[in-house]
Image (cartoon, rainbow, N blue to C red; front, side):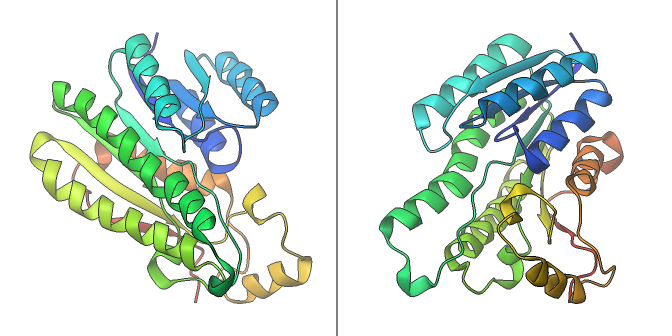
Length: 244
């Protein structure tokens, strides 16, 4: 078993899966959960094992408190100490606000924000025992500037940013840093429904004129987990190619 452990929510695909790969390559044990993508989760687990990582993988619907708590508690039992938490699980919703209903609200906020609160509360207790830890929340540029037809999603990511800043102030003296990564347009399954025309329109507003990759986000997460970032906390760090 490796010396350090990262726990990642929603890691079967996209940014979460790439974070798992990057951390495994850099000598971390990896605990991650998934919900529907069992095949991809098992493929990722085998990939991480082949990279030399000790891996714990569990099916957990992050909107289900009991399942989420069970995943975190089992991870702590196995690895004893969680050094890095990456709150990655999230869903998007493209819909006019006037057409949104309470079910939409519950889905977005329970997935994107409430799950983060539950997991962080449990992992933080473990980190406090060791008086050190790194908490990394995956936010979104829409949480900073807002996105048309993504009002609820934008609001949930704004909540993530406020949570990040406040938690960093509360636990900085315990040697626990809390930061958020705010991706712009990243080439993941979350954007698979966009047309080529829509993607090209997005690229026109990006200074680098290209989409980001999950690896761009994962490498920043690795830096924020490293001792080199010990004096960085309470920050919302953009990975957006210089979006206008």
